[in-house]
Image (tube, rainbow, N blue to C red; front, side, top):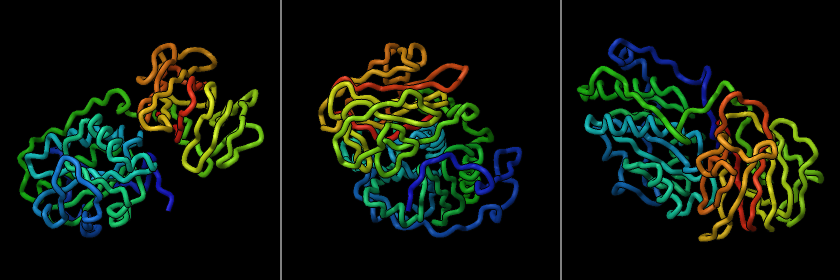
Length: 352
């Protein structure tokens, strides 16, 4: 199965009508029974909690939130999930994170602990490194939300970002059904900032792309890619929108691409407000300096939070780095990153 992280919208997303007090207009039939909440026994570890069970959660409303810590779509949904957990936890809601890794380094418990600590999460998180819980839910998306009622039945789901108002209405509906309704009439107000800010969907014309042999698209270096072979690459004179290329000495692997010598770079022609790159040092504990540019110049006020205005940054861990957040107008731009040290490893570009 090809696992997917994407914004999920359109006909497949359930549309729910709202009443004046923020509850669904119709009764229980509006939320069908999609199945029983499956077992959580496949978790390889637990964070912020002792091991939980589906049976032990009966009587509570459960919001199961599937994530992988480098996923920008999950990061942008986090302000809402955190706010719901804080507001409704004393009214019977349990937010249950399920961390199912996309990349091998996301199985490393030190990485997972640090990333979830940085995300300021205090609700229970099942570490699902073997995909046992993911498979039990028949899930295929990061992020994914499953809404479980007090009887342990899945009543609704939401795949990908968005539909936050509807998701909160479902939580309130299930709490009300369980007799846990003393939470006020107004919906939760959220003001996301930084990497968690919503994408600029109107100006987003670049999609996630992997920097690896197995899953990439639009690779434009002359001669193409060579799997597991160290070789020199070059950037063509012109890149079309959403094409990318390598320069310098690299080894392209199935899940990532590693720069073998200082001075190696990646060029990407993109159209979006934000540009992120999942990357890190190929060797644990190492640091790798890099510099980014836009159309051949320092990014200035278009720099992301992980670089300065001159484009300078340092890889110190395996995570998502925000490299560009540019002001309007948004137009086609050429991004370049040059690694000033050998040993940088790149995994995927995401945009927003």
